Image (cartoon, rainbow, N blue to C red; front, side):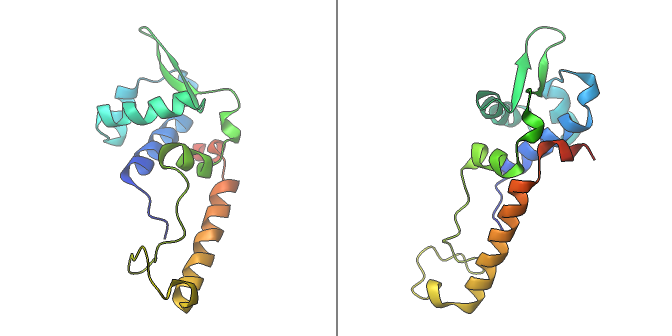
Length: 134
């Protein structure tokens, strides 16, 4: 129901890989890229944003790579989505994709879709990165 971009999906897959392999310490982005079948350069750009926003930290050298920053376990998936793509808009017609529908405010289907999207967004705010380990 939320239109998740490929960038968000790749970012979340990369973070899940980090969470599930945290015992390794720093992990090379190349390893994540290969394991998750994500283009390396694309994943590097995503992780640059995550580093800038202190979700992950980077290390250089032969034992370098990326790992979760201190306290990152308590960051929500909603926050990660906002970092990567900004907060999703709930003003677009969910079913037909109209940006400026004259009946948007009175459409009973749109009201139900918005309620669903708002509930999903609340769940994403409650779901923390530490839960990706499972």
